[in-house]
Image (cartoon, rainbow, N blue to C red; front, side, top):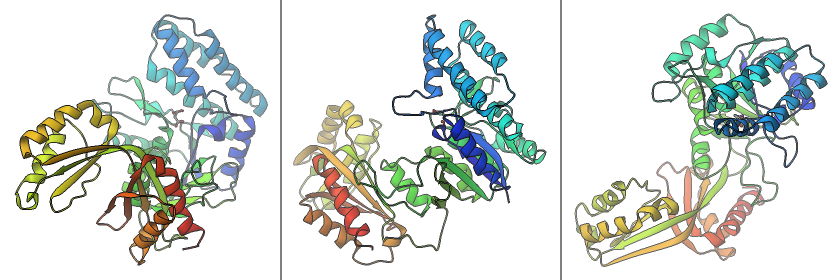
Length: 439
Ligand code: ASP
């Protein structure tokens, strides 16, 4: 069984971090394929290499001098090489990049060099083969990642190579040019490599000991989630929990490979397991809480609406025609409420409202903004009675007025809508009623 290990930017920010990473890799001989990001921030206020590269590109594309950020990039890599005491010079690569910036600046190519150069250093430091991602990861005509094309090429390349370093974040488009994933995309590369070699585990190394049950900016020192299913993760991530790149789930999920989120600075911590299914119970009834502000609700009321066939469809169509996705549609006997993202709705507001007025002739049409949605997620909720009661007790005790309730049919989540100003208080109260009471 092989493991694919991806290390994020903060895990590779300087030579000290590189040494930790090497120890981690050498501690387990199944850690065969290494996917590095570009060096991240070393301290608050530091600049990530990728951001410096984008800055170079921005300046170069306007014909401006990019000496300063480019020098900062070279100094950063040279510093790492020197402190690691390895026999490698990247001077030739630096001049190729400089040349391209001077004569034909390309955004994705420039950005990808952060991972490319870091991969070169990592391969030298570990004494492992370097596989350039441009030769094994492909994008299609529409610019999307091409799984069907990538997997056979990457798989046969890995079959000939016991262990290797493959830089994250980029591949090649149909014209042979370098193309990157969106920001944070090294997570996707790691997932693709894991899928291609049918890894036993995809380890994603970062600077936290796993996913937290709630946003640490809201709840102080939230507990780590020890195991979570892909479905639960999707619910939490959609509502704002920041985890890995969202698109990184798909390749490993498809191949049935679990992800283990680990902390480079505390490798002894178990981290979080992200799996398709598990018999393991979470430590608490709920797995996690996340939420987002800035939704608004549009409530359409009309007497006898309930018996008017096609009423809901007509309302929904008014939003669809303006390209607005609906988050939730709680309904009553004679009213239906549509919850949407405020910024998207506002752009088309008057158009949608007048369409609704024309198509269904409502008695009242109310718009309310400043709504926050909170998702309480957990596979354990299905088997446990009283979960909803507990949530509402917590909210009542915290004097939070509940504006909307929605429980998914999967019983994997309960969504509550509250006023934006009550959001943080509401999240804290729900967290504490489940976690501090130990249930
Ligand atoms: N270096 C890229 C970024 O900063 C990709 C990554 O780190 O995953 O977005």
